[in-house]
Length: 170
Image (cartoon, rainbow, N blue to C red):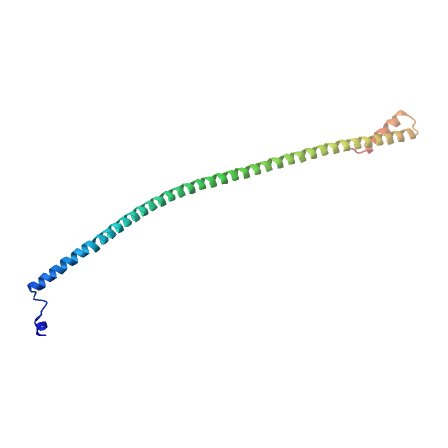
């Protein structure tokens, strides 16, 4: 036990330094053979994976940018088509309104023409009725003149004049 009491790790001796160096070199060799290469290969693989992920992310960003540009173009085309459809619908509406106005004018003209024709027919009928009444009155006057016993021609003329003045024509 006395040997253990005199042992101090902080005061290296030649034997302790030799064995420590030998164990360290042996450990370093084993680590180089079995640990450093796999670790280095794993680090290279990880670096490669990270780089490929970054490249894929860059491609994805580029594709997203392209898709966004394409989407913007499609949206612009859709807006143009919508505007064209709205303009076409507006033109059709205006055409329908104009057609309806023209049709209404034609119908109004037809109604006016029918009304004028009817008025003319009524005028003609009124004239014919007036002529018939005037003829009837003339026959009545002639009948009254014939029935009356008249002595001279001047009395006949006075009678006709008085009968004509009694008839009021407008």
